Every structure is written in structure tokens, then in C-alpha cells.
Length: 151
Image (cartoon, rainbow, N blue to C red; front, side, top):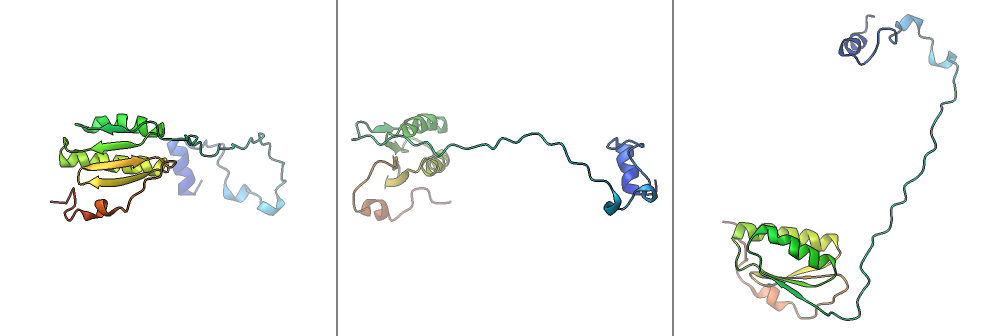
């Protein structure tokens, strides 16, 4: 047992001394008898396609949320997952929590194939993929000062 790797494996308990065969006793790979390996049957996993909400014929509801803390994001997520557009008014939140909430809402809209748009500096619209928002978008780009500028 002159191989330091084998000695270390025995010391750590990863191999037994009986399993470690001196290199001189090991036959070359070409002269070994190959035995068929016994394998268990493998069942492939079929992942379902992305399950999306069926498109309703018309918007019957729009939810407006005035979050005060970051934990109010759950209300936003539950409504948006059901395919309901959500208006988020961040005027009652601190800038740090508002940034976190917008990051969360951006990920939510990306994950559910929706869109997020800025309406004013502190108001955002989350719209599901089956809802078309019309307008020129000038209001979203008209704000000369970013809402959450780095200080």
C-alpha cells in the first residue's frame, strides 16, 4: 500500500483495507473479464408544459394596492397569478422597501410572462400576458427624475 491516496482513503474510512489491492496484483484493463452491469429500469420524467391561465374574454377586475411594508407583496403576487392586472402605489413606502418591491414585481411579471410599466414615479402597473395595455407610453418616459435614484 504505497499509494498515499489509497492510504488516506483507508484512514478516512472511505475504503477498507481488503478493497485496496496492490497495484502489482491488478490485471491490465484489457485482460479483465467484463461482466454485464445490472441496472435498474429508468423511467424518464416528462415535465409538463408551462401551465398558463386561459385568457378571459374581458377584464372584469383591476386591483389597486397601496403597500406599506414589503410583506404586502404577497397580496400583489396572489392577484397577479390569478390573471388580474395590479396597480401598485408606492407613495406610502420607504425608498429601500419600494426598490425591493419593484424588484419582486419585475421578477413576478417576468416569471408569469406579464409586463410591468411605470405610470408615475411611484405608481406601477403589472399586467398579465393576456392583457393588452394601449397608450403611447410617453407618461412612463416623461419623468425627468428617476423615482429611485441611487444616493
